[in-house]
Image (cartoon, rainbow, N blue to C red; front, top):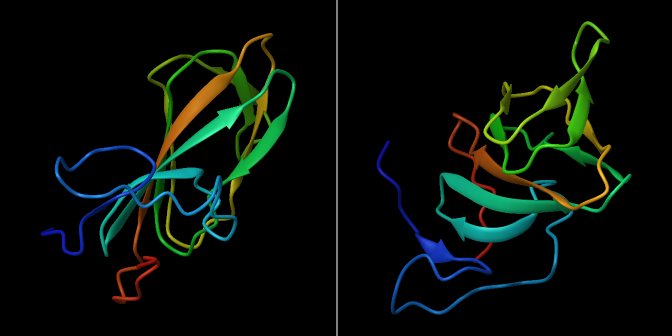
Length: 127
């Protein structure tokens, strides 16, 4: 899908454009610190300290969560706990509740989160 309204977040993704780092977190999105956004997509970075738990997702649109580091665990829909390795991902369909992740390691764990705007055309973007 074509993207419109491209803008940097707290990372310089588009050269020559200013960064728009509007705080450490966008709490309503639950997708972490903004890295890049369009009117249709949001990319955030979630950092989880050792032994902390975080809720990711529940944005109204579909969400893709990719583990950048190993050491986190999650409880699947069946209630079974599974460990995530670097590169593992979790897909949350539109309307699905957020997912809880526990950093079971002694080092920081990071996730990159891709939030997709709801198909009804509603935008979550912040300009």
